[in-house]
Image (cartoon, rainbow, N blue to C red; front, side, top):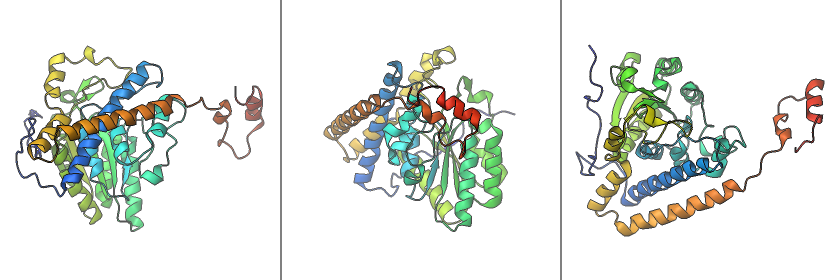
Length: 352
């Protein structure tokens, strides 16, 4: 018999109105709590700017993440410096937390570099992965390698509820379980796999699948940044201690379309979106911090002003980028290019 997948308990620390539902002690001092809010505000301002940049023809396509700031910021904030992130194509907020150069990241969406030219090793943030669910296998493979090398590090793979329906998810979960890989499988269940609702993909919580593989699974309110941080931090500590993988299902919502090439109004109604806007992760956390006297309106204004300045600088750098040389499509393909390729290279000016 199918069950209502929304009628399942999940970890929550803050209610949608910002009031605590339990113990709010997650091991972060006031300054770190303020950092969480600052990063969430920055991420949203950047996300909205990227939507505008795409509409203005400065980006080819863009997948917005508004509504998922707590899921991404809270989880990435819980990672250690040696842990490695394997993103899909919607984790720009997590990239910001990890210190990735945003202009270089967005070169992928501008079409001037495949995957972004940032150094994935420096920031422990793998290239953007568009093929659905393949990054989960990559993450488990890296985690297994880290374990065999004796590294005190784990891998975190971000993916959506649609990816949880792919074979790669199941193969990665089974491999992680069998080999005890220090991997975190972090599902951002945002309700829709493009136009397919979760109810048409699953009859039980995604997190409950972990028991079938023999490892830990937890469902968390993905719009509650404190709960996301706490759950992820526990999973990281377990992985570092050699206790194996964890599947985390962060229940959240994609306020915008799947991408700028999508019209979400064709498959969902305004009432649903409005209901989730009322659970806004930034407003929730801001209210809690204000009630706890950790922040005030002046701090929030400062964050918003700083985010606007930062995003303006990113825009200016991004739109000043020149188109790559045409010769780049021939570079780094062959050590000794065949004559057919050389003829193609020489058929037109290198920078045409």
